[in-house]
Image (tube, rainbow, N blue to C red; front, side, top):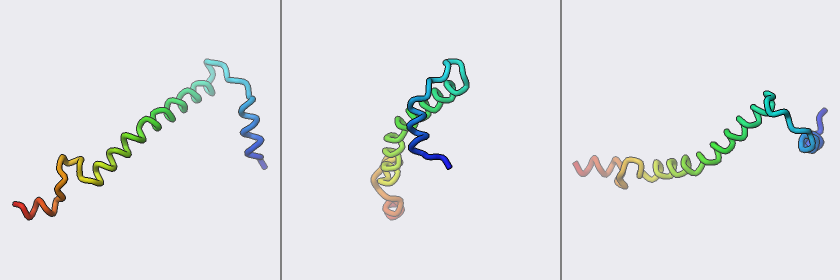
Length: 70
């Protein structure tokens, strides 16, 4: 059975992979994905908030109210 704490500690002191290795490439890709995900979160949260409040349609009037106005 693997000890997660030991595995985490060993990974901290493992030597870095050579620049041209697949491990280094995968590490760079994963780092870029994490960065994009962090940048995207506030934008997606704002879009959900707009959708919830009805601002994405450019109006604060709910569809029910618009039907009665016609």
